[in-house]
Image (cartoon, rainbow, N blue to C red; front, side, top):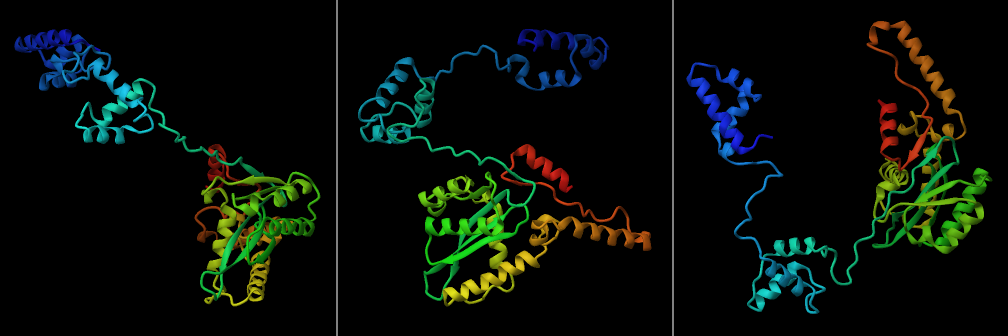
Amino acid sequence: MISSLNRCQAVELINTAYASGAAREKACECLGISLRTFQRWTQTEYVKTDARPTAVRPEPSNKLTQAERDEMLVICNSVQYQSMPPSQIVPALADLGQYIASESSFYRVLKAANQDQRRGKVRAPNVHKKPKACKATQANQVWSWDITYLATTVLGRFYRLYLIMDIYSRKIVGWEIHTNETAEHASVLIKKASLAEGVSHRGLILHSDNGSPMKGATMLATLQKLGIVPSFSRPSVSDDNPYSESLFRTLKYTPSYPSQPFSSLDEARQWVSHFVTWYNEEHHHSGIQFVTPADRHNGRDQEVLSKRKTVYSKAKERHPERWSGDIRNWTKVEVVWLNPDNQQEQEIIKRAA
């Protein structure tokens, strides 16, 4: 950085050289500056000032005195105002006919004194970390479950659909409908699902949100007994449980979903039973290369995808002029992540590209 004194001398030398017939650009090169820098210096007052952040500048005339700053700290720490932020202190002082400084000045003084934390008994909000990433490379490694409401013919009354899915295969491995939400219902459901899937190994991860049925003592005791590891979303963050949220959207937006509310518990259970059969056995899921959850859960997806690749290859051989590039990618999705970190998200994007 060139000081203001040296800038003035440089401008004077360049102007003298120019008056003697030299080109300004050549004169600037001799002093080690560009022509644009010279123009900036001469077109503004920059040549007379020092704009460097480390430059020594005179104290502003309107700066608070040390006595005023000390008075502000005394007021903020007094019994009357120690639990109040500056946004309340300043108006309160104005009601008493007293003005010392603005709210922003109060905040700056408190910050300089390391007293800008939350005042009174108010505590900083809890910071909830993102759930630990879960990786599934085969069925029955990571399950996700949640509860959704099913409308009834009685206004304000809903049935509760408990639903568990395997995130690797997207198969619905367990479901029940009740009139209320309890940890006992959830406990029974997880027992039935574990028995139906033959889950005997310890270490299965069961992810859910923070509802009382998910974190109830009965439910947690059942998980511990079965050797299932619980995983929970952050409070009020639905994105932490995306697979269950997506499944509920599919359920409620499928064309067969009743246009009228359910009139009875049996009617709701009958419809959900048909939906689960269709979803597991017939629905071609976009997240797993459009194979059915049942085929992927039972290990038949590789065979299905290989047949599709053969069909596409033969179609290209018959009419190669209709293909501008390679055939469609029918590679099996080997890994499924729940709440991946940034690096894992980038890997997922690269594989999908």
